Every structure is written in C-alpha cells, then in structure tokens.
Picture (cartoon, rainbow, N blue to C red):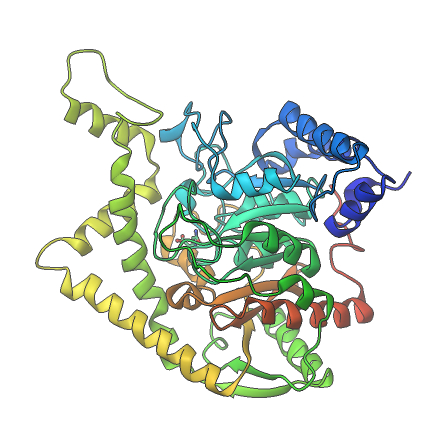
Length: 497
Ligand code: GLN
C-alpha cells in the first residue's frame, strides 16, 4: 500500500470520508513514522499515542454511523506546545511549566478536536516562542529534515520539522514576529500568519499579546487553507478576536490565479545580507508571477527599516508583563520551597532556574523599556514606528493587491552558528516582522531550492488585514506553476532521513 504519510491532508480527508481509509490506520501510520524518525529530528516534546488513537476511532465510528464528518476529520496534526491541552503537558518549551497539566483546552485545540482532527502530540519550540531556531527550547534543539545539522527555524521549529519529515501532514504554529513563516521558509513548507485577531488566542500562552497570532502550517497551500478555516473565526473568550466572517480561504486556494492582479515587490527587502540563491529564486518567482498575468510594481516601504528595532522593544515590553504570572505559585516549577524562604525568594529562585537566557534577556529589556523615565523614549517611540509601518502598508495597498518578498534573508543556518549572537538571530525575521506590527495577513510558501546549498527558499506574500483569501489565491497559483516546472520541493524530493 502507498505510504500514508506522503498523502496531503486534503487527500486523507477525502479517503477517510469515503471509507477508503480509516482514521485509525492513517493515525497509526503517522505514529509509526514518529517512532521511526523523531529520535533524529526531535520535532515532538510529547506524543499522545493513546489520545490520538481514541480520537481517530471516534471519527471512524462517526462515519460508520453515517454522521457527517468535518472537512479534516481523521487527519493527523502536530500542535505547537504553546496551546493548552487539557490533561496533556503544555510546556511552551520552558522548564518553568514542566509538570503542569492544563485544566482546559485552548480554543484552537477545541476547534481541532470538534472538527475530528487527530492531535498526535505537542511540538518543540523556542522557549516562550522567543527565537528563530528552536535552539532556545529548554528541551534541546530540533533538526531540519533537509539537513539535521541545520535549524528548522523558530520559534515553531518542531511544527515545521514534523511536516518536512512526514510525521504529520498538518501542524499549528504561532507567529509573533515570524515564527510560522520563517520555519516554513527554511523547511520548504507552507505557513500562514492570519490577520491579527482571526484565530483565537484563548489558551495560547501569551508572549506579546498585541502581536501573537496562531495559524496553519502544512505542505500545500490547499491544506493550509483547510486548516485555516477550521481554526479561524470569532471567539468570545478572546477580546481581540475579530467578529466577522472568515475570508473564503479554501475557495481561494482551490482557484489560484494572479491574472490581472497588481503585485508589489518590497524594495527594502533586498541587498546586503540577502543570500544570492535566495534572491535568485525570489526574482524567478517575480518573473513567474508576471508570466502568469500579474502586473509587477516596485513598492517602497521606508519605515520597514525600523521594524526590527521597534519589534525588539514592543515584544520584550509585553513579554515582561505577560511572564510576570510565572511566580512559582500558580503553575509548574517551584524551586527552593523548603520552608526557610519567603514567597519572594521562592519566586526569584524559580524564575532564575525556570527561565532560559533569552527569556531573561527579554524580560530585562522589556522591564527597562517600560520603566518610568524611559517609557516615552523607548516604548513610546517604538509604538510611533509601528504606526508608520502600518501607514506604509496602507499606502502600498492603495496601489497593489498583495506585496511579496523573500521570507528570510538566508536559508537554514547551521545549529550553533547564531546561538550566542542574539542580534544575528534577530535578523532572521527582518522580512516577517512588519506584518506582525501592522496586523496584516501573510504567508510563506516554498519557491525552490537555493543553488549554492540545495536548501529551501521561502516566498512571502503579504495581504491587507481581513484579505487572507488573497494569500491563498496567489499562493495556489505560484505553487501550481512551480510544481509544473520543477516539481514540488517536498512532495517529490523528500529529504532522506
Ligand atoms: N524570532 C522572533 C522572536 O524571537 C519571532 C518569534 C515569534 O514569532 N514567536 O521574537
């Protein structure tokens, strides 16, 4: 029988619905794959074998009873370990939550379960989603299935690696500054950061609340759209959740086209620091879009140069406040509580032991930026830059339907190369951060392999807020055209493990 782990989510869903495959056999195939390769990849922090099989059985029984199945019923998924799962460990890649069992499901978790999606387990990530390589996980790094000595991106490296190593056809990530798109780019997969507020943050452990956004990860544009539709939509439990219909993303993914569209190339995302092979594949994609009938326009977004600086004030500021709740009293780890110490001492010891270096760095930066006397100079200025970036986007979208750029300046770098150099690490998100600051929708999809190292290159598409469907329309057209020319990088050129 054909290898079930090579099927797309769309194919699995159809086959399960028709009875050609059972959800249990699909789940078992993926669990076996995890067993075979995850020792090397380390995409998962926790595999919920029993829970996954029980969910799969429930789908099969539902079908046998003749009940209608959801659009992704029986499809396995890898869930980033930042979403709470009732009774199943949720660590956010941190020691501080070790041993904590959430008493409730995140809205995303609940929607997945309600849709019959089979949650295989929880994926590795940079601690509290801070990082671009998954090296900041307290539980050790994840390897990139294309080359296990290289990073799978971050913070959602476990999710991207699970897709690229065929351990799951679908995954969920979160994107505060690029943590869905950058991992997608460096693993040759598809990742979407929906419009801010499109996917509920309820039960998604907070890093930087005004930037955090959950979203779908997959190997194809259509699969990402199918997952997008399942997880998006208004949630009264999240006060920033958008109360409006989800844009028609699946319809857009099924009808890819750029005919007559105006597509803007962001001028600022090129030049020094951009790998030659990344620019080559990007420029070829631009040509391809032109051939497919799009009008290509160069667009300048002058404030984007300041996005990284603004982000690294706003995100740490919000994190310093959000992470104050890890006080040794409420969750997980408690260090030094031997009866001789005060509550303050136990809190301090627990935070010293429970948080890693990058998280501490950000808490200190954020606390400093928010302190009286410095607030206006740092946090206030960063918020002004944020407004300028939003205006750049608004002006751009008066002229074009979507913007495009490389997703990342380089392909996957070696594990260890930037681990001790936070600034070099931060540069991985140069092109992704503006969309978070403005709240726009953005996607990364594979656009070829860099000639110099044979590693995947990501094409970023950015759409106005609430026009997420445009990402899928353009993405599907690019994917189809590229696949017709040189095959799908992942589906046909599977990395050998
Ligand atoms: N790499 C960025 C950071 O470290 C983005 C993280 C994210 O999107 N969660 O903050």
